[in-house]
Length: 79
Image 1 (cartoon, one colour):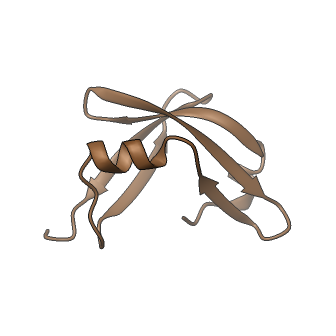
Image 2 (tube, rainbow, N blue to C red):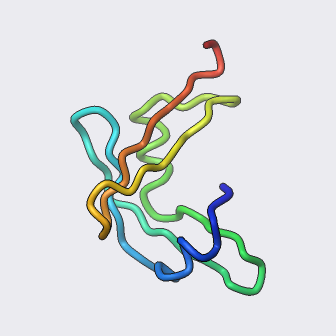
């Protein structure tokens, strides 16, 4: 997942919620400053299964409350 390093660096390791539709899932975001990569670890598999993500789908993460809630917009590969 690519994110702007300046934006995401304040997270380092942060518990967040991923919201899709009317449901939300707890997750953990980890930022690695040396590689400048950001990962969603704990909670990602549950979110991906529940939202029926498939190969080729694109997720856009919108921080909605400036703390820990991301509204996830999914563009399906079939579109």
